[in-house]
Length: 112
Length: 116
Image (cartoon, rainbow over all chains, first blue to last red; front, side, top):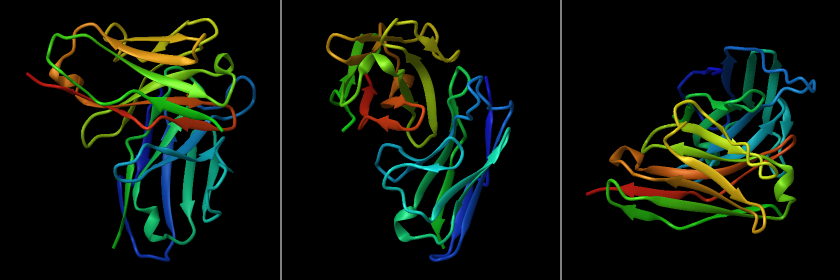
């Protein structure tokens, strides 16, 4: 299985300040079709996960532009330019390039 | 609008069987994989497996192979997750999810509690 390793696992951030989460995969995530199926999900307390970013850097419909994704191959990053109160929750990277699909361990974003 | 609507919470005893469902709408059901994700209490997300509803060739994660059965009925656009003999360690929230090339959708979750 592909192992997805996120850092940090916990991120206390001041409102209005930036935040960054890294995700490293144990294998290259480029699919034979040429795309890289690396996504970022947000899970607010008591809610199902919600897609933020797909294919490394594409914001899903309705996602604020303070969220951005970058990376290639095995190293990926989610950035929040200015953290808002509603961003509290757990963030997961996920790969759907290779079976079985796998998630990172999750990063708990909290407000200082 | 794509929607995945899951069946309601369940409380079962160890050894009992269970089948939970996920009704899809708003897209061509046979054109996308659909799968199940487990979330143990206070823990992270784990893919259990995915099924391409068009041919039912389910791909299980190794940890769940032989432990559960994932199936789909394309005539009613519904995916299922089934246990033949529940254990207390199966207590968790279960989400259905439909990954796509440019999107992804999630059900609201089904809480399964297994307790004697």
